[in-house]
Image 1 (cartoon, rainbow, N blue to C red):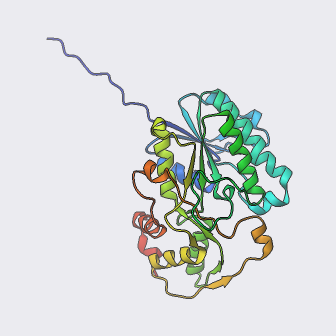
Image 2: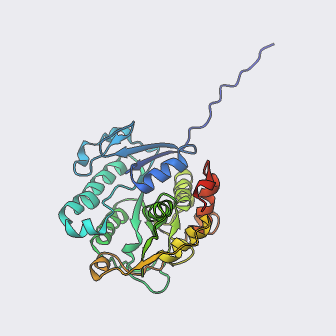
Length: 303
């Protein structure tokens, strides 16, 4: 009697290449998705098994490593509005010329592109602005992001993910809060400064959905925005509540120079985000609680 042995292989996981894999969002997405997708990363130096991508010399990248099976999450940029404002020629090379060259070559290799843009492209708003709102970039950083958006929308099928403030226990702002509380120092909070902050888990979930089922999500521009437009004070109070902090904090008012490079208030909404997620986006408080529950020793954060 003949016995047939199945030789079926496990289907290959979808491939994601994170350009700017050492950035805050790039690192967070790698951590969240590496067990779901086949994830590779670029860094400027190509260290620790990453691919080398220097946006000052994008022609040197090994484009043969990119295939039509890849989705590219493009995170690499100078993200400081002050640096973009004070050194515009350097910022243009890193934030526009280098990315445009890299993404054009990647598109020619057949890859799909998810470009991380910014809510500052929408500009200052008082009422919720969705993806149909006319861009009104505020500051040079926003203008550079918009320039790449225009290139991609004209020359490719890329998707543009406009990020509001991306929050987690490890973002710059929350890390500062955690440090202050560990050192028993009252945090100093900038006010007024309002954004529809989005939890990093929602950003990673959108990237996963787009990578695994690209045809089901035809929107070209997606606003990654949380459910509430909230100040830095409101964000801090949500973290304080999560860890049981009842102490004081200080309020600092930014000067005119600070607001020259960023709007005081950007109120976003999205026609597409909930549909891609399959649910409403998380509140920041629930995002913090989710992270704390996943920590090996969550009580170490409690006060």
